[in-house]
Each structure stands twice: as C-alpha cells, then as structure tokens.
Amino acid sequence: LSGLKGLVGAKSLTEEDIKPALNKMRDHLIAKNVAAEIAERLCESVSTRLQGKVLGTFNTVASTVKNALNDSCVQLLSHKRRVDILRDCLEARQQKRPYVVTFCGVNGVGKSTNLAKVAFWLIENGFRVLIAACDTFRAGAVEQLRTHCRKLNALHPSDTHNGQKMVELYEKGYGRDAAGIAMEAVNYARDVRMDVVLVDTAGRMQDNEPLMRALAKLIKVNQPDLVLFVGEALVGNEAVDQLTKFNQALADHSNMETPRLIDGILLTKFDTIDDQVGAAISMTYTTGQPIVFVGTGQTYTDLKNLNAKAVVQSLLRG
Amino acid sequence: MVLADLGRKITTALRSLSSATVINEEVLNSLLKEICTALLEADVNIKLVKKLRENVKSVIDFDEMAAGLNKRRMIQSAVFKELVKLIDPGVKAWQPTKGKNNIIMFVGLQGSGKTTTCTKLAYYYQKKGWKTCLICADTYRAGAFDQLKQNAIKARIPYYGSLHETDPVVIAQDGVEKFKKEGFQIIIVDTSGRHKQEDSLFEEMLQVANVVSPDNIVYVMDASIGQACEAQAMAFKEKVDVASVIITKLDSHAKGGGALSAVAATKSPIIFIGTGEHIDDFEPFKVQPFVSKLLGMGDIEGLIDK
Ligand SMILES: Nc1nc2c(ncn2[C@@H]2O[C@H](COP(=O)(O)OP(=O)(O)OP(=O)(O)O)[C@@H](O)[C@H]2O)c(=O)[nH]1
Ligand SMILES: Nc1nc2c(ncn2[C@@H]2O[C@H](COP(=O)(O)OP(=O)(O)OP(=O)(O)O)[C@@H](O)[C@H]2O)c(=O)[nH]1
Ligand SMILES: [Mg+2]
Ligand SMILES: [Mg+2]
Image (spheres, rainbow over the protein chains, first blue to last red):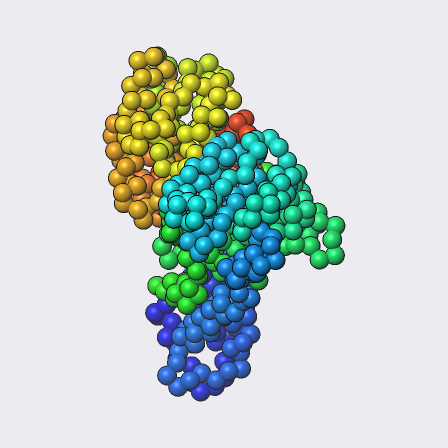
C-alpha cells in the first residue's frame, strides 16, 4: 500500500479523499480471499465512519483507512458471543443428558475429520464421546469414522480411564434415514451415560433442496445443543451463499417460530491458504456467528481457537 | 447452467455498448468495471482480472483509432478473446491411446473430489469399451480404501489397494504392475489429498509419480475455491507434470471462476467437469462451446477472428 501517502492538510476528510485508498484496500481484501461483496460493504462502512473526521498530523489517508479497517475486522472476529463447549458439556452432564453437536456443511470441507479432532479434544478433557454416523450416503463414510474411533481409543485406552471406553461409534450402515439414527444415538448415549454425542452428517450442496430439507429435519427433531457449520478456508465468494442458504433452509423447513440455525463455524484447512485468510471474514460477516474452532491440519491436535488479531494482521499484511 | 450468472452479467455489460450513443473511454471504463466486478464475484484470480482489463484497454486506443472503425465490435471481440484465454490454455487435451496401457494419476487438495472423480472417469471409459481399473494409493485418509472399494464394486470396476501396506508408493507400483500384466488399458491411480505447505506430502506425490510413470496427471479442483487456487495449482505443477484439470462440484451455486486460475497456473486444459455426487454426474468439457454458451453467443469464433 505504499505509494498512497497522499497527505491531506488539516481539513476534514471527504468521500473523495478516501476513495482512492479505499479502492486499493478493497482490491487488497479481495486478493486475500474476502468475498467481493463483503469487501465492498466493509469498505463502505469504513468510508462512512471516516467522512468528516480530521486527519491526525502525521497520518496519511492510507494509514487512517487501514487502521479503521483493522479495527472493524478485529471487532467483527472477536466481539462475539462466546461458545463454551466444555462448560456446557459439564452442565448437560449434571442434567444427566448428553450434550449434542451436529456438524454440517457442503461436500469435502472436513466435517468428519474435524469431528474426530473435536472428539479427541473432549476426551482429553475427560468427556466420553459417542460419534453418530449419520452420513449414510457417501462411500466409506462409516468406515472413516470407525477408523477414527479405533485410533482415538488406542490413544486413550480404557485402562487409563477407569475401564471406561472413551469413544464409541453409533452406526446403522448406509441408506437409512439420518435423523432417525441421530435420535437413536442420543437415546443410546443417555442410557449408557455418554457425555457428548457428535453427529456427523453427509456433505450437501446448499441448493440441493431434498438434502437441505433432510438436514433441517435432523436438526428439528433432535434439537442439538450446538449446530456447527463446517466451512473450508479455501472457499471464495461461495462462502456467503453457503451460509445464507444453510440458515435459510434450516429456517424454511422447520415450521417453527424460532428455528434452530447455525450457532457457530468450524473453519477448516487454515493451513492451506498462507495469508489469504479472507474466508474467516466472509463467514463471520455473513452469519454474525463466531468461529468456534479452526482446523489447521489433518491430525487430532490440529484444532485451534481463532486468534482474531493475528488473523487480521495476516489479512492486512502486504 | 454452469457459470450462468457470470455469463449473464458479462452479456448485459456488453449489451450496454449498443445502447451507448458514443463509444469513448468513459464507456469502455464503465464496461470494464462491470465485467471485472462480475469476474471477481465469480472468484477469478484478481491478477488475471487486472491483466484482462489492461489487455482490453491496450487494444482499444481511442486517440489512435481511425474514425470509421467499429469500436463496439473491436471492444466486444477483445473481451471475448480475453475470456477465452482465461479458460483455454491453448494446449490439446490428452487422449488415451488404444492398444497400450494408459496410466492416469489423480492429484489435488484435500477433499477436492479425487476419489469420487476417479471412479467417474473409470466408469466413463468403461462405458466406451475400454478395459479400466482403479488403484487406491491413499494410505493417509481414514477409510480411503473402503471409499474407493465401495465405489468400484458398485460400478463393477476392478480395483487394487491394501489395508496393511502403509507406503502409497509401494501400493501404486504393485497395483500398476499387476494391472499392466493383466492387460488393462486405462489404469487410474488415486492419491491422498495434499497441499503445498507440507513438503513431505509433496515429496510423496513425486515418488508415486516416479514409480507409476503416468501418461496423464490430472489436477482435481473444487469449483468453490477462491483466491488461494493459483498458488496451490502452481505448486502442484512445479512438483509433478500436471497435464489436465477436472473441476468438481459444479452442481453447486459456485461460479467456478477460482478453478479457472488453475488452468492459467498449470497451462493445462479442463477435460471434464463434475456436477454431482453420483457416478454419471460427469461431463466432458470443451472450451469453445463452453464460452459461447457462457456468453449466450452462437458465433464467438467468428467474432474473434475479425
Ligand atoms: N490440510 C488440512 N486438511 C484437512 C483439514 N481438515 C480436514 N482435512 C482433509 O480434508 C479431506 C476431507 O475431509 P473429510 O473430513 O472427509 O470431509 P467431509 O466434510 O466429512 O467430507 P464429506 O463427508 O465427503 O462431505 C480429508 O483429506 C481431510 O484429511 C485441515 O484443517 N487441514
Ligand atoms: N455435489 C458434488 N459433490 C462432489 C462432487 N465430486 C465429489 N463430491 C463430493 O465431495 C466430497 C469429497 O470427495 P472425495 O472424492 O472424497 O475427495 P478427495 O479429493 O478424494 O478427498 P481426499 O482424499 O480426502 O483428499 C464427497 O462428499 C464427494 O461425494 C461433485 O461433482 N458434486
Ligand atoms: Mg464426512
Ligand atoms: Mg480421496
């Protein structure tokens, strides 16, 4: 952004003063993989906020714009309701019921893998986990989860946990109705006193109406404690459409006054994008929901919390 | 239709040329702005978009242009040319040869659709009468072999893989050897998902490529990918000799523009597109008809040649 150091005197900023710097900033955000529409809206709000302000003596328009954008983005990513899963799991345990999380999203984004990472994290925190294999469509989906259960149990053998098996798979093979299997799994978990049920679902495109309807049904009949939308950091402008339509489908097909919508986002493949971190902005901007976890690799420990400041630093760098 | 939204926006922008009374720099700038916005919203790489804008502008020089020239037509044709350039690397698509074994290796980012598309491609050739088979050289992802096996069994395609061997290089080599001996004509090797940031995964890809000596390396791209596409596609191309691109998940709302930068980065043509999870949700891809469909125009070639 050098070359933008056009100094403005001590007069207050007009839209025209800000425009060139803001245009560059918008292109910069797009290059960092923020959805075009959202980059535009972010810049507009910065422009509105800066108009009429007087520039500090040593500040250029460019640096003023950058600072304002920095603040907007940090706020966007951090000023959010906190999702405290561990606390909520404990509370559910006291109520003698399992805490239920549903993972949903489009195809191949990392739902099942990151579900396994969340399972690992919960086990490490002393919770017993039931994984519900509700992707009854994609080839190998059940075996994928079975493999994860075996590996997780090997990492946390029952003899180190008072003889208790820390993770189990609830599966009914392929072809059956996902909502029904989820319900059976929750009932089973309640009966055998498992603490958490993690519900894996099949990937689906947001425009595929029958599949979206089926997901809405699963969520409606099971009323999970947490609906996590899994999205990959690689996604471009499509992020906006995915989240909007998942929420819309959950609302439209629920026939309820206050339908269950997406409660939070799990942002995957963060290790594959260098500093093109824009999807984090697009997704939070679109839903107003927090990024609960960030997936940073393919092993169980590659699950992190979002560091808003660091992400915004990457976003504005270069 | 695939990329329909983008096509509509571009044609609308071009149509505005006909309604303008004079064609001057201002008109051109606003046209280019509209087209570039549409491309960016479709995830086309921002550097490619900037280049497109510059290239069109460099063709149309209002000061030098003779008065009688048809500026509308020149602008339209310059835009068309640039759009075709985005999608068409100018390289002929690879075709299998009869009477020998053709080895095709699939590579790409995690979850892009390799395993699913492997079976689709095998099925496509099988229906055309080729003797085809599948090899699972992914020992990394949980359930990878089960996935390929279940797909292959359903499509009645012979397959090879191992639940015990942990080295994908060994599996790939053994599988190819076995199927060559058995006279298979199209041998498709599926590999793990990987990304440029992890050297060991890229090294493994190179080793698999070295032992199977593929005739065609296919880079599989997800249509919803954004600006990170270029760097990843470029890195794959630098490591192994990518020769073709397949874009998957075009049944989504995704405009697929991000994946197009894989064409530019790998200088390889798109040979097929995936349009669903089922085995026959798969179509061969041809550049010219695609662009004309995209822009709702019948005679692009005619336009471009003038
Ligand atoms: N590099 C990287 N790869 C990841 C990450 N999370 C998941 N993956 C990989 O992405 C691929 C797809 O992951 P899955 O968990 O099968 O995705 P899914 O969303 O369940 O896929 P479907 O059920 O088929 O829709 C696998 O190869 C994972 O190892 C991540 O954070 N980083
Ligand atoms: N809707 C749709 N889904 C697709 C398409 N192609 C693949 N998929 C889905 O995308 C997900 C990931 O596909 P895979 O074939 O497992 O991807 P992969 O590249 O082999 O994944 P890794 O081996 O983990 O890297 C699965 O849910 C597939 O069913 C497509 O064209 N359309
Ligand atoms: Mg899955
Ligand atoms: Mg695979």
